[in-house]
Amino acid sequence: MPRRLSDYVVSVDLSNEWRRHLVWSKKNGDDLKALVTGRYTSTSVFLSLLFSTEMAVIYSPSRPADEIREALENKEIHKVEFWAGLALCVSIFFSVSALVANFTAWSVFSSLSTENAPIVLRSNVGLYSAQLPSRLVVLALYLFFAVIVLTWWVVMPGEAAFFLTLGGFLVIVHIIQTFSATANLVMLTGAMANMPIIEEDEEVHLSPGQLSDILIERARLAKKLKVDVMKQYRVDYQQLLREVEDGTLQFPISESEYNLRASKMVHMRRQMPSRFLDVRVGSELDMVDEEHG
Image (tube, rainbow, N blue to C red; front, side, top):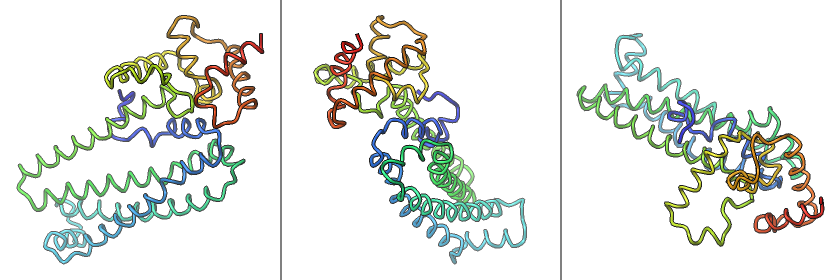
């Protein structure tokens, strides 16, 4: 269930909304740092391989590579080879840029202390900086895919190149659409937080299809509520959705109601160790309700 047209071509996990959910859902600074920096390790290896592949292509002694270099040298803009070479050069530039951004971000964010990691990463500067390497990686990937597609048109008959291009495009759209839909489901249902979407004793009796139906219904309900990201992770979001679903709470929800629920959550976190938050949040909030009278 992609929500925007861009969700079909750019994965939701590259959006500012996803990053905001990510940094607000994690209360522990170490967990947040691990999530943000964990991707940089594999990305660095991948970018190194991509960069070496691009350099091998542009300096290859093969006939297609010779034609691409000649088209660039002679500025033959009417040839496919010229645009394949141009896309390859731009792709190399963005691969190097992504490598630099990735290593720099890794160094900067790894130095954050546990206490200050949430503060920095939740700021506009932190959000943008953490997201920049991933965006450069995707841009480099798309450019390299464009090089591959243009190369097909250089070395293959037109019909074969057309069907390969169409097939490649559809596969990429399908992959992005699938994970964009899953990412939207994760954000709307509050699945990044510690509170379980469905209680464990209820979950064990549900089939995969029933679980999907519940998640989709919760996501649709969340879209109607339009809860701000910061508010979503300051209250017991799952309890909120259940109460709206049961009809015990009407929306739109007032600001005072959000503040009351947020204060209960803060009180609960102070009263209990964080490792018990996942499984006891529902019952503990009931106890807090009684204390608040």
